[in-house]
Image (cartoon, rainbow, N blue to C red; front, side, top):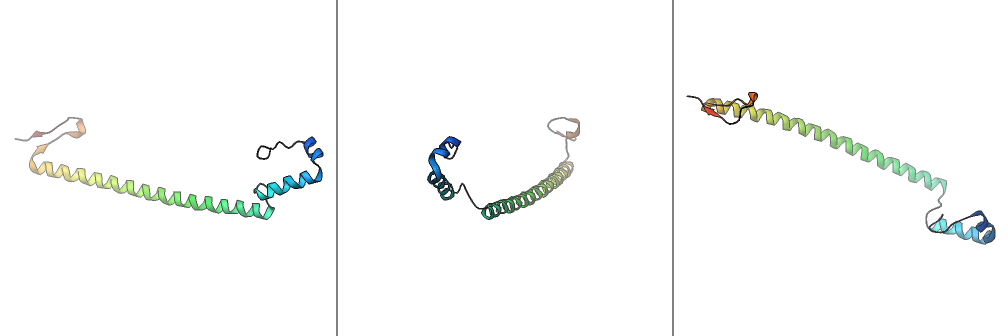
Amino acid sequence: MIDGLTVTFAGILQAGAGGIVTVIVYMILTGKLVSARTHTERVNDAKEQAATWKSAYETSEQARRENESLAREGLEASRMVLHLVRSIRGVVTDEDEGSVGSTYAT
């Protein structure tokens, strides 16, 4: 089937050489029929583009992992500072044991 045209063997026999040439010209003009060189160039271009996107994805994933690592380090540092400030102020919390809230040391 070529864009709604059903091509059958009987139809080709009835159309003759003129019909066959018409179909081939139509396919060339619409880009359905290309030379082997053009096809190879398009395939190579698609492969190059895929490699570019893969490289961009890998770079993006590496940056995301680095950002996640930095965020974890920052979170750990902020927890340490919070614990230090609370201990200086005399606020006692027991987050490791699951208690909620804080109690003041007397």
